[in-house]
Amino acid sequence: MNAVAKSLPMNAERVRYDRERAQAWLSGHLWRTTGVDVQAGVTTPAEREVRIRRVLADRGLADQVMGRFNGREETYRQFVRRAIGIELEADAR
Image 1 (cartoon, helix red, strand yellow):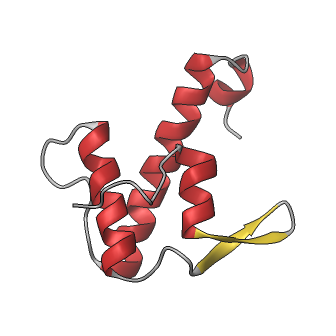
Image 2 (cartoon, one colour):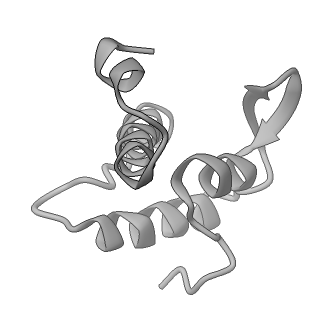
Image 3 (tube, one colour):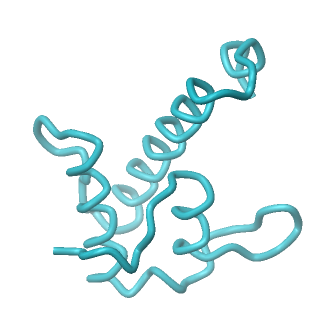
């Protein structure tokens, strides 16, 4: 955890900061693993969420294990729900 995150109390601002960092990390991860840039061009957070949903759906990644969290395997679907607050069941178009 970096110094900025340590200094922020757990409130709405901290949650927004953590979600932005998680979304930035996921965007880079998807770029490296799929070649799709969900941040291409000037985008809003809502547009990036739609692009993330689309990439995960189109590539069949939603239920693939992407790593571990608290000692348990975590899928892309679980990660985006927990870390970014995106529900993949929402319209991916």
